[in-house]
Length: 240
Image (cartoon, rainbow, N blue to C red; front, side, top):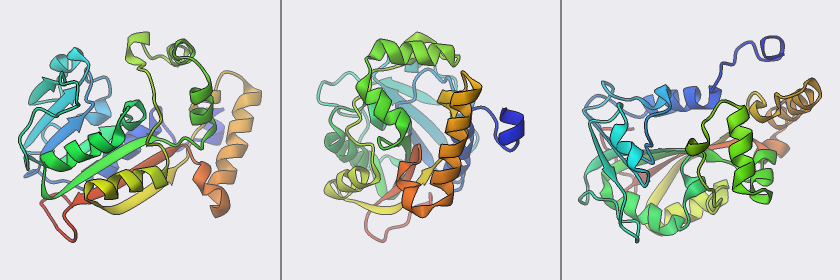
């Protein structure tokens, strides 16, 4: 059914689209921090050669094995301090990370601190108003592991979620309280990745996708939130 209903979509469509979203905002002079970089499971998050320097941090020690990074550091501090000095990076990216953060306000303040004036924070995270986000909040972690394993993801790559910053409004609140200027927030909906286990559920997901993409009234129920935040009102760094 993928080929018939979504011939233009590939696997990991959201990560591929997010990669282009990031590339539009950087050049080869930029220094990047991949916040929540993990072990490098997604080729789409490999920005080596697209920027001057790519660093990554994660609470998971497997970040030390990430081949996409010039430098990696493990987050060990209980207060969430990022082990870099103030004003270090031109761009911070966070791909499917905010849903795991327990204290988003503190997280945003730390990301603001390590960004250079005029630098940007670019992120993608699930929308809590989408049926996947709603179901995830109502089910235990072992169920998430089971579902993702069926989708081809290893159990150890499914991490506990908090969903404390997973709406456009909440992202804007955390951003502005930390000093960021909100440049762009958008919502995306695509192929129903989590409903591919039967023709009936897939058709339901297809009708849902067509509805939320066609009617602006329902756009707040799309699956993915993407955003660009800038440090420094009206500022402009090498990443744009």
